[in-house]
Amino acid sequence: MKALLDTHHLPTVELEDWLEHFVVAYRGGRLIGCGGLELYAEDSAGLVRSMAVESDLHGTGVGSEILEWVEAHARELGVRHLLLFTVDAAPFYERLGYDLVSLDAFPPSAQRSWQYRVVRERGEEWGVIAMAKDVSASS
Ligand SMILES: CC(C)(COP(=O)(O)OP(=O)(O)OC[C@H]1O[C@@H](n2cnc3c(N)ncnc32)[C@H](O)[C@@H]1OP(=O)(O)O)[C@@H](O)C(=O)NCCC(=O)NCCS
Image (tube, rainbow, N blue to C red; front, top):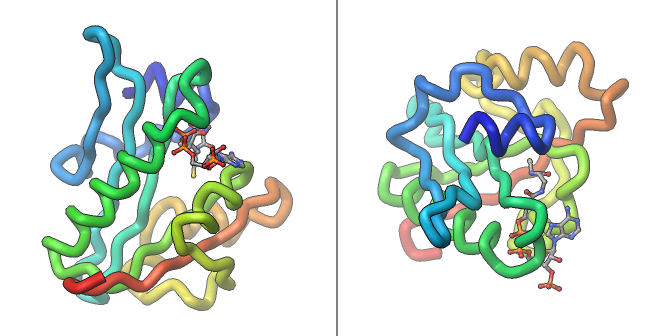
């Protein structure tokens, strides 16, 4: 996963802490995609992170499948608010029901995450976009 994330210049900070909320996709014995969740249960929130697919397979549906798994996993955990940061992939998330939000939409526990703190400080300069989607057990 780290190699795939490095290829796409995505951070691997605290990755090990959240592995139980991650899924990986394999094809022909090769890890071709990953994605997961940081859980902020006190606010029924989850931060979708580390979504990446091998470049030669972009646009073939792997990312959507991974995100569907992450969302289903989030619902099982009682998460109601999914949040994420992205620079380049906003159209991908928009198709799947995510809306642009301001950083103020992040609940207090998610604001304590390392990603939030970094984005608060440098996000505008880097062109980081915050997005959110409400999910429920029935959605
Ligand atoms: C974002 C990413 C995980 C999506 O995975 P994927 O397997 O390419 O996604 P899918 O094939 O399921 O895409 C679904 C649709 O979204 C579109 N899409 C995917 N990524 C997109 C992007 N970055 N910009 C615009 N459209 C995108 C696809 O073209 C596809 O459109 P279609 O249904 O008209 O064919 C993958 O492109 C990736 O690894 N990008 C680089 C890393 C990255 O930006 N990760 C997100 C960090 S928040």
